[in-house]
Image (tube, rainbow, N blue to C red; front, side, top):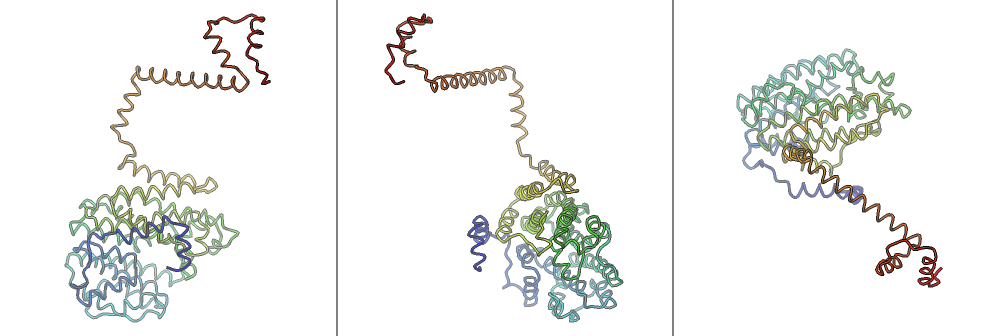
Length: 467
């Protein structure tokens, strides 16, 4: 921890508390045992750590039945993605690699060293034979699922790569954007669901809910695309659809100009809205996961995504640098997301309300965003009502009881009369009223109003010259 971190956590004590709680109290549902693994499998898990620490952590806590299949599934798709991302590979070579990658995973000893020297995960492909060696040991039913998803994803990536090679810059329509996100992540949701159900660790009904499976992947992918706009633009990549950004600026690069900040924020709001429309379906999906480690694996990224949406929503910094939620906040989210669906819903409610609070009538998407936020809250309320319906019904009956209504009204009137009386007496005392004189005269039996001469005699009797 550096000096800047110490200063940050000195101010944000609650985040430091969450960080310490996660590191101290988090107990994995299942723990991987490297001592029982082959050398090649340990190498695969080393690559998993190098390619994505966040995903690696949750994968390594999975149920033993799915630990290795999902770890290898991730590495295979990461290898495919590494080929697709590399702009130094000519399309004539890239296209067949992408389309045939599902067959390559079955070729013993295959590896690839054709990536550019600066490609982040090129070493994974250089030593890909270790992945293939372990993949060939996986149950045939799981290999069939992984193979099918890899084939579909490879073909989809090849289509988009060819369009880019032919001069298409970025994504044109929202429909194209949805299709790209489906090939990049929606298919992953489909594949994982099949693995969950096949292993007996999820509700079989999820297998038939393709829209829920797809939303799980699209919500993550779209959120990452929104967050990474500056980083992608610096790398000459553009994933925000022209159909959206052209409503706000003439050229995509205009989004990064300070004079266009309001237009850029309105554009980002529409992108957030597009992603937010998947949120309630993600919660619906999570309700179908039966085993705790599988629930944790699926819930943590979704909770991180809704927190990221709240962070980027109407945040001008996203056009200046790559922004991320802090480690302390991430630990708080992970603590809440590894318990149950109710806690995850509370996380979603918290961040949806942050989005709603930052929403502004000046934004052309104001009404639609308000509706989208309300839709998420309505779904949460439908499965976890904020009030007990029975208690609410009982209270209603009591309120409808005429006798109790009368008693409550009389009590209110008595309270009001006392308040007014106290106010009058207090005002009189401040103005000089002599309540001691009044009390003494009353004790002597003088209850009627005195005449003027008697009143003057009483005044002189009690006057001590204070005034």
